[in-house]
Length: 148
Image 1 (cartoon, rainbow, N blue to C red):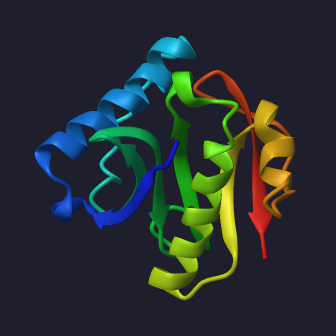
Image 2 (cartoon, rainbow, N blue to C red):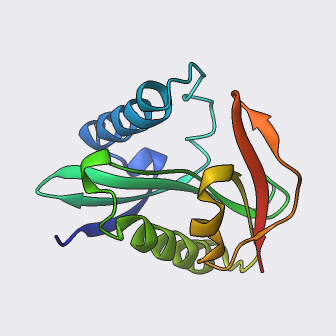
Image 3 (tube, rainbow, N blue to C red):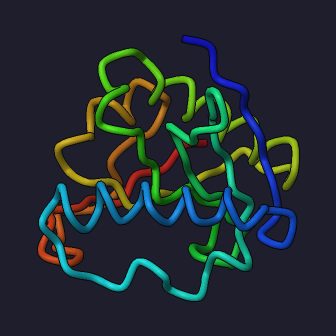
């Protein structure tokens, strides 16, 4: 399956794109992970939004932040792939697009993320290393990871 990848500022997202992004994030982070938390956190307006779509449906998404908008260094967050498309390497393509987006749009190579602990090996495969002990974020084990 071929996805068309886009990077857009918040203001450039269409209403349909924004709706699909919020739906995908809610579907995975709230419903699937059974975690009640405030996904709409006031940071979307600062972020660049990376997404892959096929036939008008958004199947993968992440948001990118320049340094000091989330962490001290540039960062990637809300990394999500539609459940029906997992195990098809789309998450790896999404991370590649996100890392390239940080380089292209912010001129940065150092990236910090707050990763769900169970995805440690996935992020390590993209050059991230663990830089903190495990901590709970919304009752889900996380670790800070950095890529230089």
